[in-house]
Amino acid sequence: MSLRAYRASLLWFEPGAHYEEDGLLVVGPNAKGVQVVQAIGSWRSLSPSYCRQPIEHLPGRLIAPGFVDMHVHFPQTNVMGSPAAGLLPWLENYTFPEEQRFESQAYSEEAAGFFLDELLRNGVTTALAFATSHTTSVNALFSQAQARHLRLITGLCLMDRHAPQALLNQPGRTTNAAEQSLIESEALITRWHGKDRLGYAITPRFAPTSTDEQLQAAGELAARYPQTWIQSHVSENKDEIAWARELFPQSKSYLATYADFGLMRERAVYAHCIHFDDDDRALMRETGAVAAISPTSNLFLGSGFFDYAGADRVGFGYGLASDVGGGTSFSPFHTMLAAYYVGREGQSKTGLSLSPQHLWWQHTAGAARALGLEGVVGNLLPGCEADFVVINPKATPLLARKTALAGSLDELLFSMIVLGDDRLIERVVIAHPPTVQSDTTPGAPLS
Ligand SMILES: [Zn+2]
Image (cartoon, rainbow, N blue to C red; front, side, top):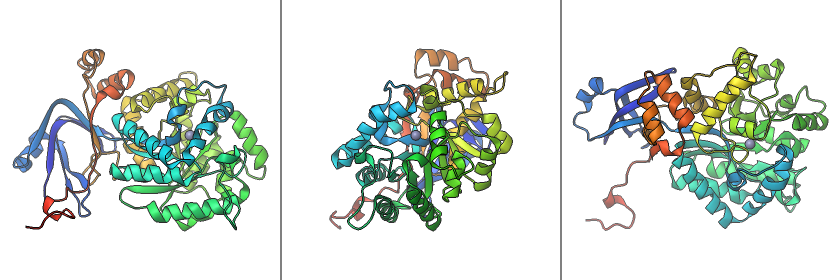
C-alpha cells in the first residue's frame, strides 16, 4: 500500500478540537481505492512507524480538514454583491434573471467550473449546492465536480409556480410541470447519486414556489430514495413566512408545511431557520432535519439572527453555509466571523460568544455530521476521506504578527477567523482515487 505522510501542525475533532503542534498525518487508499486518513497524531509517537514512507515536511503550516459548505447556490456566483431592498426584490431583480441563463449547457459548464475552482481556492472541499430548474445546470455541476474528484451534492431545483415562466419546471408532452420535474429528478438520481463521490438532493426551492402536487411528489420521491438528501429554505424573513402561511394555512407553521409533505427526515437540510419557535425546533429534532446557518447572507439581506441558544436548548443539528449569492463570500473565514456576529447580536441582552473552536467545528466536522457524513469528510480521524487544507497562518503581514502572539488554540483560530480569507489557504488536497499505473492506462502499449 502506498502511503503519503505530511509533517505539520494538525487540527482535527474528537469531537472537541484537537491540536498537535508537531504532528504527522498519514494517508493512503482504502479498499475502494479512495485516499483516506490512515493515522494522525504527534510526530514523536507516529514517526517510528512511518519512517520508511516519504514524508513531506511543512514547517510553520497547519493542516486542517477541508471546509464543508452546507448551502450555496452555484448559479448565483454573478449575483453576489447585488443591491436590493430585502429578499423578494433581490430575487426578482437579480437572481431570477441570472438563473435563466443556465438553460444553456455552455453557460452552465463554464459557471460550474468557475464555482468549484473558487470553492477550492477558499478551502471548501464539500458542498451541498443548489442548481437551477434546468437539468443542464445539474448535469454541468455534477460532471465538473466529478472531473475534480470532489464530494458534492446537488439536485434539480423544483419550482412550478410564483417565478418567471422561463425559470419554472416545464411540462412534458404528456405530463404537467410537477410530474415532469419529478421524472427528471428521478432520472438524475439514477444517473448521479452514489457515483464516485457525488450525491443527489431533492430540491424544492422553498414552499411558496411549489404547488401542493409538486411538494407531495417530492416527499414521495424522498421516501423512495432515503439515502438522497433534501434541501430547501425556511423561515428566512418575515414577509416570506407570512406568504407561506397564506399559501399553506392548513399547516401548523411554515416549517411544518415541509413535514406535512414528507420533506423532513434525516439528510433534510433547511437553510436559515431563523424565526423559529420551540415547536419548530422540536420538529427539527424529532425528524432529524438540520439547519444550514447562513450568517453572511442573513446579515446582508437583513433577514435576522439564527438563535444558537434556542437550537442548543432543544437540540437540533446545524452547521455553517455561505449561501452565495445572498451570502457575501465563499470564504469560510468570513462565514465563521459572521456567525460570531450573529451569536453576539442574536441572543439575550448579554449576547453569546461562540468559541473559535466551535465556529471552526460548525464549518467542518459539525457540518459533516449534520449532512450525515460524519467520519467521511470534515475531519481527519482515521478512515476519513483525505480532503484537507494546508493553511499558512502567516499569509499576510498582519496575520503573521497576530498569530505569532497566539498563546492558545482559541487565540490562534480566532486570529485567522477574524483576519483571514482565501490568502490563508496555501494548498488544498483532495482524496483522489489511486494513480493509474502507466502500463494499465487504456491505449498504452503493453510491454
Ligand atoms: Zn439559499
